[in-house]
Image (tube, rainbow, N blue to C red):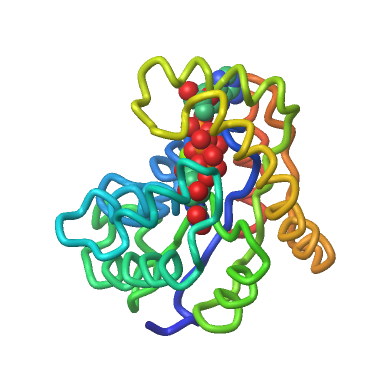
Length: 216
Ligand code: UP5
Ligand code: MG
């Protein structure tokens, strides 16, 4: 697809910080695209591929996710690119008379890429081979708060990485492997950092300000 016709926002932050929760609200209000069907994060795309019958990557993805490690970029970027191409070939996800439709004319689309890139190699490959993001929404709060949110979600999520052992490994991967990506984009002045400790609505009002400014 044509890079000049898409708008991409990366949504980053530690495990359980609230990326998915905030993305869901943005999808509703701004017509951003979920990357595929019901999934809205790179992790969701990986989980869907893992569960797909006949996937050659299923076992490998499962192993990485349980260990809180980053799945090799070839797999993730291919899934993301396919999902973007697929979304662009469909009707816009907003009604015909909505002003949000404008971004879709001529095959343009607005994408929210949640939980990606989380390793330097992914960031560089995506920026050079797929497209550059407009900006990065970076949510931050303490591990204590994130742990509490994840342990609460664990009661119902069914996610194989929502257990204390995997969560601790995810925290470590985030600090060691994903924070360098955030800092890399900080140097490019592309990061909007949002304190995620507030309530869902409180965080979202700050998100709206950042998104309105960047789309204006
Ligand atoms: N909650 C949310 N906001 C709240 C608030 N303000 N106040 C109180 N509660 C709040 O939220 C977590 C929980 O907190 C929910 O119950 C929510 O109601 C509540 P959620 O919005 O789900 O947080 P999120 O940041 O999306 O947490 P998630 O667990 O999805 O983050 P991860 O980054 O760990 O997970 P992801 O799915 O992105 O990745 C999983 C794995 O996939 C990775 O560990 C990795 O192994 C693999 N992966 C790759 O290998 N490559 C990739 O590119 C991407 C993923
Ligand atoms: Mg998520």
